[in-house]
Image 1 (cartoon, rainbow, N blue to C red):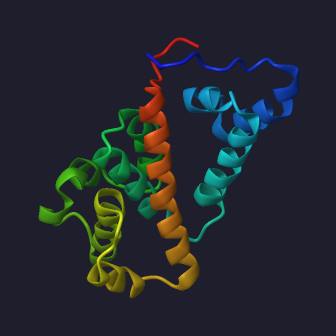
Image 2 (image 1 turned 60 degrees about the vertical axis):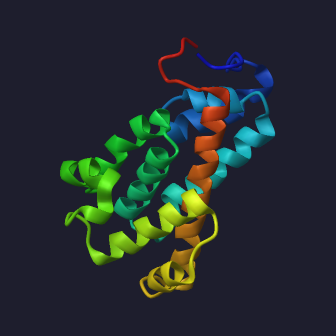
Length: 174
């Protein structure tokens, strides 16, 4: 159960924002119901994460692997539950989803996926990224895509921390 009540979604001053959230996310998820306690934060969050998910060059399968790996490392079931279907839609195989926990000892991931997962692990676990990890990932991407990759890893660490701080659970009544 969440640590505070979810915000109502029927406040007249939030009508437009709630409609945007619903249109972009297919409804008002528990995460956004919590964010709506602060409409400016909900607005910024929606637009930032939508830009990462829909406006970037980073391939969707890599994006979803990153999101799921961050969720796994941070032990955030809420995020994984929402992104497993998205990962499958982007072409991530069921075997890769199973192998993500021990990707270093798996042959299911190609060289590019492995450097992306190494960067994800470094940014999530250590925060500081070792030079060899950065050099390897830098060799795979142009500047724009590299910025998008790093921003995605950082953003979904933010999501994890927000979800866990409030104990947001999609099974909570709203």
